[in-house]
Length: 498
Image (tube, rainbow, N blue to C red; front, side, top):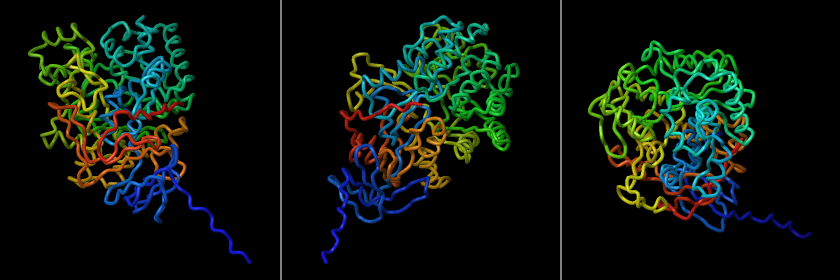
């Protein structure tokens, strides 16, 4: 009798050999090989795998690539900084873009290192439908118009219908939800916010909200920002994502988190995010930087720093001049003092809350050298500025909260950067069910890092210094970072659409 022929041993395109594999969905935490074939993970095995190419990663962590739900850094240069922070999917969800088809076409034409996707932008749709401003132009156009009074005024019924129509069109074009930066138009009727939430709920996708002011900071607000989001989740059934809780809640974050826990307990779907920095960044023309309302929030001109020049406005008159001259100019806004233990505790509690995911709020690069090549790598020294969170959010979380404080376990930190963001989206965006996991059949979006050395390096003074410790970053099976070095020609990013 002829012995049976053993089945052929599968040969994978690439094998990551002998790393500590973390899969936050299954709880797998073991030394294993990970096989990659094409765009997908083809095997995860504690027995050796065979590959056409083998990379030894013993002593390193192999984890799902990080999913950033809150990135305004849409360009190749911005994606490169985020790749070196372990990010494999960068999504613009809080501001969003409209028309969303334009945003996807631009990214596809230019190519991107990371996977990309966009929500429908309530603000840009409102700029067109209510403010009569040009529709589209990307994030820079949105920033330039943020301070314009025309789009912030009350909408007529016809204008609100036109606004909802534009958002419906964006959802039909694949938008990943609706971004609502209602904090930038704080006198908009709460009924409009509810109408937009109903539209998102009917489409089965989340809203992503920059909340309007809290009653503690603006007693005249039409509705408390936290209660508005909670009410919308309860009344409409929408999944309401509360963006960057510390940067809009400041020293009232504990109260905001309690509000969200209350509505979760009542069955509402709400999620939250945070980044580990005590300063935000926004266009200097933003409504909440208006000299007439600035003091009510407990901040002053000394808390504002113009990103491009480092200027701190000397007084309210100078702030008015800067807002008039270039309302889209980016500025740091310091809201918590990271060197003060009391302030830092608010930031830590928000980030460590059990339902918080990590979101960077990565910002566009401001080019201070107009002759610089935006596709050059490494970035020319001093040619551009951004917020350090663009380059360092995920690495700072691993350094500070896992390695230094021991406040997060490594698996928990990885889950907050990968699986939990995927779960915010996956009910309405099936593509996210294949991300945030290390499992056969899932997308080969992977990060390999050294938990003992991974660290952020970007600072407010030197904001474009890439993070370190990420040895390999694969996007759809294609290396974007290899042996710690970014590959400038790698543009494997693919669109994520509803």
